[in-house]
Image (cartoon, rainbow, N blue to C red; front, side):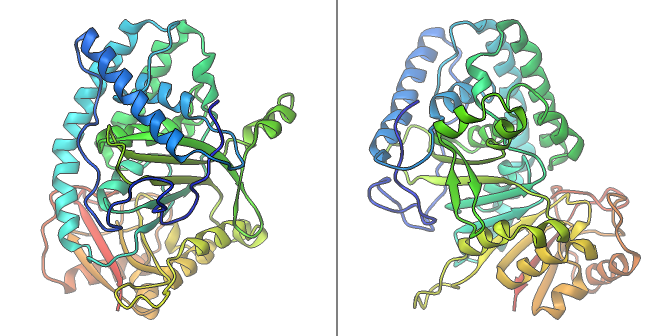
Length: 431
């Protein structure tokens, strides 16, 4: 393990952390992608990229509670996500990794051409210039790739879902003869994510039971797609006040013979990243929190709501900012935000979101409009797809909303299609 870290903070703009760019600057791109085909070039590029990522870690490092898992993250980044940094552990067959990465390169390229290159500029044309740089994505397990495409200038993205982040340490001890099968499983699930433009719940459940941590693999793959590399991976637990308490080596050692307690230490993760190969690039953060978002759990445990509220950017007298809010997105959420059993997270969104993009599983029109939001529709919607239990009243309201607005073409899926397979998207914005 490398040292402990300082550089906390939602803005991620402290001079000690990195030479920061403008908070709303361009997204870090370029320099990412899979390792070069030539063995010599691959070794040189890997060494350079790994040294660069480690140098960023060293520049950030001082004193911060919590164990750092960057070496494991870099190995997983290289082996499973096929990123440009990190090294293939010597015990693994490099031919297995090369074959896996050839297929991943093809999947990445197809996904970027079919979805990212189409959706990202389209959404950019709709997104206000002065949005908060903090994003909250409920029901968003495993889908950081579309979160970055939707909000490429975000400095902080928090995803929340039932799935745990998972323990990254098995990359250090997994038997070599298990690697090919394990990589094939993750590759299959990533390809389904790219094909469907959302993470399927059944795939996420299967990912959570693999030897390598599926949630981490998905997020590292998102970094490759968008030209980033990891510079830190830590785990945390939320205190009752919502503050993250980072998992320490002592806690891991104490839970070593208590499987349930040990697994719980790896439920929530914080992944810091920056533009691949650019030591001067600003450092950004993705946090994944494993939490049941229904009302019973949110009322029984106030930590998540407290944490999300702490993310809201304060007004602080800045006349040019929409203070006290976050940006948000959700999709493929089985219409849970339509349900009375999820009123707590829905109310939190309505109280703290400035601008939100979703498919039909976002906030229903009757509730959004009553809370002072306007909704703009894109694509075609003839009724909800049969995921979850969408109510007929809200389904009819949403159909009327689409029918009442000008037809705006949508050339990509954003989450679920409608009942007849049409792509659709909704922007919910505070009036």
